[in-house]
Image 1 (cartoon, rainbow, N blue to C red):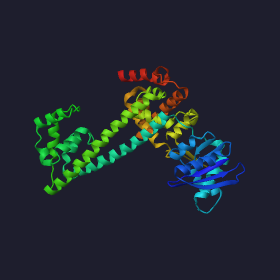
Image 2: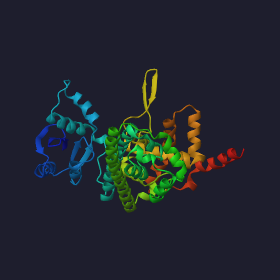
Image 3: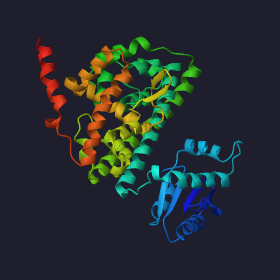
Length: 406
């Protein structure tokens, strides 16, 4: 049988069709313990294999379906199901019953070309959820930092010129200790030296230089505005400090989870990959090697493979927008680090691409595509990256050394 589930926040619509496309059942079940139990019972009552199509790849309902032995779950893109409606109706009508039927009948026709979801290990599922939630904390931190920056620019911009970034612990402590411009103006070399010593400052900038940065920007507004904005700035600094501590907790948890997964060594063996990038790529690629049967499949998932549109005498190669954006962002950072840490090959490729007229991110994608192909091969073979087998990189090192000498 083939099933389509149009999921919702309070109810789920289930449609069952047989191999000939005849509707066997239409049922609406609530999003409760009893409702999901009833849905699972309906799917397993056929005493055979039931293929289920649903428009999401994660969540409470999907994880419950993946525990059923006689059920295969297929994640269908909402764009695919939207286009599939046109096969049955020209009018733009939409109901839960119709959407569930479209999912089920489309799965009946196309399941041979689609790949079912595979249950992952508990460690991988925990790592996937942790890295996704960490990303949300980073977004909150970025938004809050922008609000704090706008507040400081409105009444006391001197702090913005003091340390390397506003979200650093020492910047937040300076705002809490000296929230008013008049208080910051009284910070001399001796007091600044005591402050950075107490906060274990690692910026290697002497107190004299910090005071020289501070003094020219000690602007001020009216006393009332100063008091109000200082009150707000201290609250924002407290919130940002809390998010910084949460991020450190997430990083500690990611390190713990990576130590438990056997595939971690594959990702961390590559140059330029730290714990966060390793966790993001591991969670995105998963444990099912059949999910990416070829390197181009992984390149398409991560947005590194361009999209070619050809019709008649027109041919365009475009940027791929439909991709796993979390993995794409991680690979962009990986390539950015590689260009600096691997100048002999990655840096050479980036420089050649820029000289050929490519933009910064296009050149980074070229570097990323080469390393991602190598990562895919190692991931498929369960082997670590071995720099001694990387022929092109080995050949580039003496060439770069010769150019440097000349």
